[in-house]
Length: 270
Image (cartoon, rainbow, N blue to C red; front, side, top):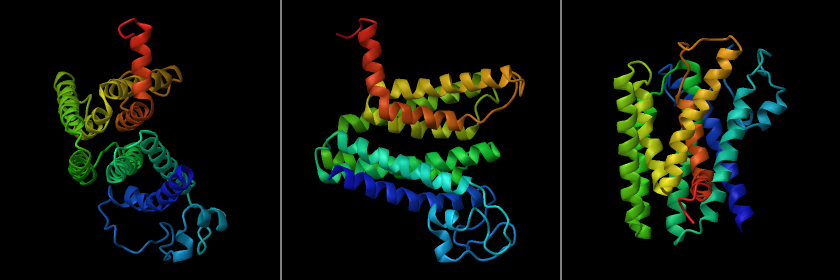
C-alpha cells in the first residue's frame, strides 16, 4: 500500500509543481494567477495538452510550439522537484505510523503545503531576493490551522505546544539577528523563520535544532565557496531563504536521527 500512496503523492506533486511555475513567475510581478497561460516570448496561448507536467516539455523539445523559442528547463525541474518532495513527505508520514488515518492525512497536508511553498519561495528568493508576504503570511496561518486540526484529531497537544514555542523562538531569534546586524536578515527571512520553527518543532526538538542550525552551515559553506571562487566578497548579499528551507527539510527527514546520534556520541544520552 505504501508504494501506491507514495506514487500518488508524487503525481500530485507534479500537478502542484506545474502550478508553482505560475506562482513563481507571476507573484513577484503581481500578475493574476487566474490569467490564461501564455508563452512569455510570443504571448501565444498555451493549450491544455501543452500543460502536462514534464511530458509536454519533452514532447515540445523544450521549445514553444508557436515561436520555437527555448522554454527554460527550470519548468520541468520545478515540477520534478515538487513531485520528489511530495513523495518523500508521504513516505515520511507513513513511516511515522500515524495514530489515525485522519491524523496522517492532515500531517501530510501540512508538510505537502510546506513542500510547495519551499519550492516556490526558494525560486522567488533566488530570482528577486524577496520572500513575498502574499505567500509567507497566508501559509503561516494555513499551516498553524492544519497542525491545530491534527492535534485535535490525534490528541497530541504536546506537539502543538512545542510547535508554537519553536515557531515563536525561531522568529524571535531571527528578529534579534536582524536587530544586531541590520540588513543581515530581511523581513521575509524573519517571517519565514516562524514557519520553519513551527514545522520543525512539531516533530521534536532534535529536528528543530538540526534544521535551524543547518541553514547557517549551508549558508556559511556557500558563502566561503563564493569567496574562494572570487565571485563575491564577505559583503556580497546572497538570499538566505533557500538555506533556511533546505535546512528545514534536512531537519524534517534526518534531524531526529542526527540529534540522537550526536547526543550518544558526546555521551549526553545513552
